[in-house]
Amino acid sequence: MTPPRIGFLGAGLIATYHSKSLRRSGAEVVRAGVHDPDAGRAAAFAAASGHTVAATEDEVLDTCDAVYVCTWTSEHPRLVAAAAERGLHVFCEKPLAFDAPTATQMAEAVEAAGGVHQVGLVLRHSPAFLHARTLVRDPAAGRVMTVIVRDDQFIPVQGHYASTWRGDRTRAGAGTLLEHSIHDVDMLRFLVGEVASVNGEVAHHHGIEGIDDVTNALLRFESGATGTLTSVWHDNLARPSLRRMEIVCERRHVVVDGDDWFGPVTWTDADGSTGTFDASDLPYGNPDGEFIAAIREGRPAAPGFGEAVAAHRIVDAIYRSARAGGATEAP
Image 1: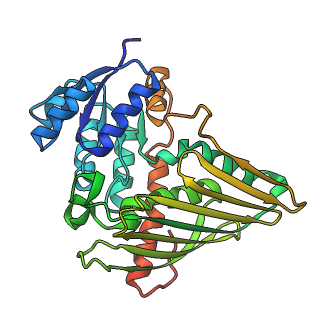
Image 2: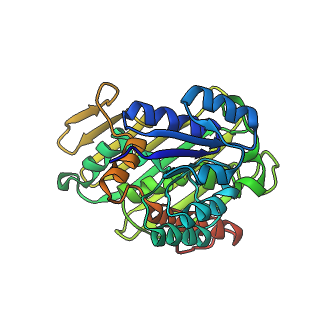
């Protein structure tokens, strides 16, 4: 099979991450066009990656087999639709859109187009969270009773993000819950199961219209388990992105802390035994290598747009609850 031609729409931090991840994966690809509204950023990306600067989005889309959509969120629906119309394979960063109905339309479009589609919910490939899932789903652990998630980072309009668009509601759609903690919502589904109802509240300490910087949510799972999620954007530059998940099962306590990818994961069982899993020295999955492998093998990639839609429905329900004063909402 001829190596797929890969194009990029957007040449910022997350596009650079995926470009480097593609290289680390060893996947054989042809580096095609890249376009960014900031011509200097596109040129720097091309010089570092081997892509060619394209004058327009259409030039990228017309000269590739698969495209990475790594723009600000408001552009995702339009660009995914353009890619689907051409029958391209599509990797779209999270969140897919501002809301679940739009995300659903995007999922339907890529499904109808017949290409491979994947979304940037990259923690699905994290060895730490994969190991936690194995521990939680082990019958010896018993049923999940509750899960506690705290996710905090400095507000991403400064520092190494080198952009301010996440502080613009017209481009980002919302704040910490949608833009960042959709990862956490996806992991809660991945580890514990489907969510039946939620209660939520949000705050806006930075005074940026429409950009929540604190979200607290109570989740009830179809299994009977409960969970809490606290997501915070603060101004402490010493904490760039830190996530802790604590899962209490009937006979096992599991904690994922430290690095999102490598952990460690620690656990304690009812018989007093304990364990620690540190993946820093182990081989691990590569989401971008997965995307290319799915293209080459003609199979679905994971996670696809459908998984993102499910997370979007939960996020929407939390925001609806917050607008209704914390009322119970179903995804």
